[in-house]
Length: 265
Image 1 (cartoon, rainbow, N blue to C red):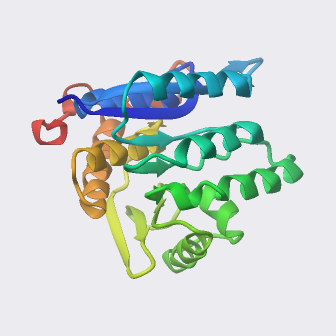
Image 2 (cartoon, rainbow, N blue to C red):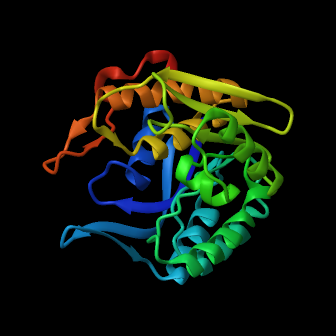
């Protein structure tokens, strides 16, 4: 029987991240992917712009999906509006299955009031999620502390867990010193690191989205959390290695022929 995965996320017009990377990942894991679109991201006048869809349209999409078929797992990405966060929370109340929350916090540094309000509203989703997957910047916002080393990352993970998360994996990326890109898992009982050698490739757009949707896929396929994270780390590593370069010099993850049979089954 074909298993299904829903992504509630924004559209990345250049298809590096957002719902586009989620759908590609679901397909790579042989899942049937569905989308509920929250916003559309474009580049205009050299500025990254987020165009929100009306919240009632998000509600209509989720109602259509709920009536159309059953879901085996949900991945949540960028939900940019406060009203939309409330709609998503209501949708999650009765769902039974893995939920992966990637807390994309895309707002300008000057939007401090909105940032604080959004953080509070986003945290209300934590109890519904199987795991939260912030990057370092998002983990700093959620934990309200700086992260400059592994010890501080562990402190931040504990603070995020205390906000109501069942588990958290902080994506270390390239920012911390050393030769390894390390992600940190914490479930209230123990820490576990997942590390790979750092890559110099510029094709990192979509790495976080792909990581979260790969974890979703692995959980749907029956893997435990730690195995799901381990597999997803390798999946994204290959996506960065095989990514494509854009005309502006940045790059998107892409998996091409790098997908291994054992990853997709």
